[in-house]
Length: 448
Image 1 (tube, rainbow, N blue to C red):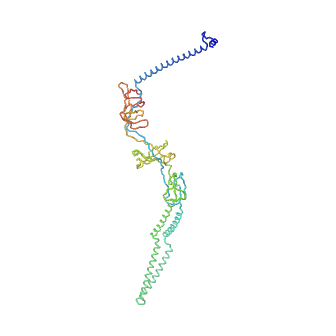
Image 2 (cartoon, helix red, strand yellow):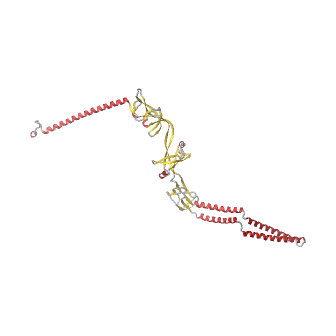
Image 3 (spheres, helix red, strand yellow):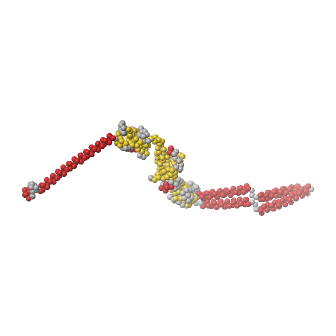
């Protein structure tokens, strides 16, 4: 089979191989050629990489000989700094009142409900006033009678009354004259024993009695002519004034039967309905002045010394800031928090967005007397025994050479990305401010 097949296929380049065999040999040689080219490429790449690494290493050695570049800051001392502190309080209404009637009675009308806005002087509820109305009518009638009598006393007696009194005096005078004449005749008769002594005495008694009556009539006439006495006028005026006071008291009761809003605000609670008999001073509504809000915040006592009434403060709530004015500093300490409460009057903008009871914060700046140096946080490195350290750049042993010196420091205050420190530092020191994780003491550096 093989001999016949090879005989049928033509020879290639006069060699005793078939075409298929020649193709197979060429493919095998091609693969070898590709492998040779790959080996040559890899060797060249390794040569290039080794050259690059060598040059990088040489450059690094040169840099280390010159020093690591660092960024420094020259420090200056400070004797004081301002610190901002946040304090928390709550939003409260400027005025809150539990509204109640000052007298008892039955509720006949309630004009508002919970959540309603009211204006100052607006009627909120009414009590039954029927018995008060009747009492007022009675007092008015009594006063009218007392006033009429007072007017009569002020006017004095009528002319006709005085004339009657004058006529009575004349009549009594004439009768007295007649009795006196009879008594004189009886006296002469008694001397002649014409009459008995008892008749004479009876005539004398008649004269005396008539004289007394005449004196009384004359006194009445004099009183009428002089007019009413001032004591009578004063007494009657007192009666009228007493009735006026009773009417005023009745009016107060009528006014107390109407409950009005003492200031503008919103009804927070309603405690009773129509038909309820209300006891004196029992709350009916809770009124909150939600248009004027305040912030009540407790701060340390030493902080209040630098605060003044009327100064502006910034309050924050839910990421928003609101302007406020320091309204008051309360004189007593809170027994629980041991802080002194300040009252801030919030702006009208706050009243639109805030409600009483919310938690609010203010930021107060205080001055701290403390000496030290400000450093960035990136300049701090962990030190020994819980302290911190920083690297100062100082001159080396040769000209133009700089090395690092480790300085032990103590952190006094942290503020944002900087800290106030003290320790083995002095004015004018150049402190490395970044990249300290790759530095060491006595290391040679170059200042950027």
